[in-house]
Length: 188
Image 1 (cartoon, rainbow, N blue to C red):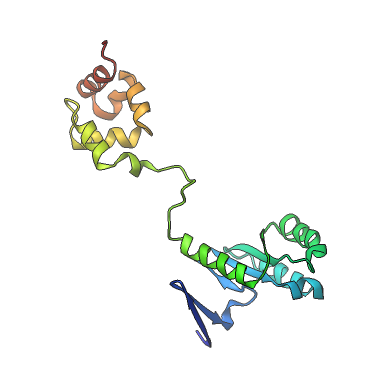
Image 2: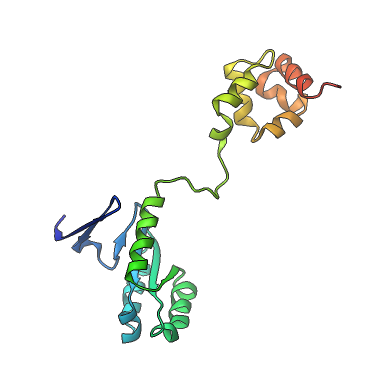
């Protein structure tokens, strides 16, 4: 792959400009890319539309994100590009005020891909935390294998506590199901 001689590195994010990107301006990961529409492109005319349509028509597996410079000068054109990008093409549109803001956003997106999304629901691996695992193993008749089965089958500790014997039996067997149920449903 032939690379142009331009390279930049900011905060651990390497940017390499390549001829082979085609209509895509930045390639973030295996499944997302950025198409950049500058203030000049927006004010100058419709040439940016051809680029966006070419991307959409390529039937790419990439998720296209369109960054648009929205300034005082280009604000009057923003509603039209917003309608075109979001409604007509079905792409994601993110307005930025200048190239510095765009580069900061790109850096955050590139760095953020490697981090866990704090708004996404935690997976079963959270329940398989060593402390939770050891607590469930303390139940008489439940060892490591049965504790793992219980925590994988029930999505929360509350759901495990509220489970009836008939729900527990297929997971851990009749005897262990009795122990688990009686532990959580003892009369005080």
